[in-house]
Length: 279
Ligand SMILES: [Zn+2]
Ligand SMILES: [Zn+2]
Image (cartoon, rainbow, N blue to C red; front, side, top):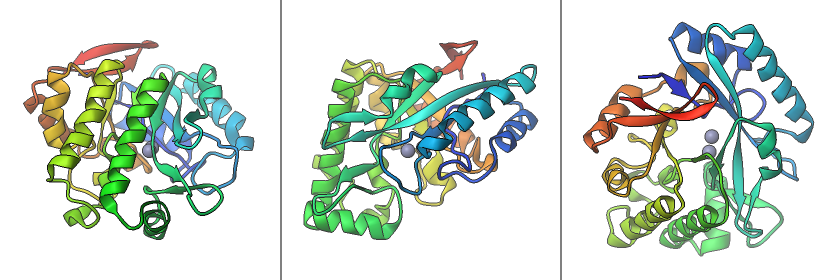
């Protein structure tokens, strides 16, 4: 099996360390390929997207490292794009031809009461504000709106990997905002899987919520993996690492969940192409 990760954040967005530290960590741990996926620059300022004026520096730094470590590990330049629900656009898609791959994610909704967007992936206070302003504090409405956005994004746009398909559960430990065991929730999540299948979308199995101590299972939930297999959805394994030491966080247990769902291979970007690797 090829050891890889294509979902990596560094000091330039909301990750933590210089890009080279991730590369050397990956080499020490025998990675075959490593990709970087900064949150794409957006047309406004915030503290978690790559700044417009850093984009070229980001590209140049990875290009330099690709040369320097050419005999040690394959390196790839990616971006994590953001779906803007109000414009139905994938922010950052204008950079798609300058990178090796893109991840498409829904992290936020247009603020119903003000300027800009509110994220449900960031600080708790921002999530509370989003719930209050956009959804009258109704967690079910927020979760349903989230899955609706995901389906819309998959039906309208093309990309290489869909980011963390059930991210909306991140702050929902003990079902505090909505009940993930209810039929309506499962139906909404299954609709997203069906949209992935009909659009031939590759999903990531993402362990980033475990690394951050937010949840105990990957995105997607273990029960969803069996449905992914039935629907013929291709998978890639992702750490969504914000620190070098998280680059393969919980990969062993997550791989056994993937195997239990019936998968015998995963997709990897290797030799410049997306190919299957046995697991
Ligand atoms: Zn993300
Ligand atoms: Zn990410």
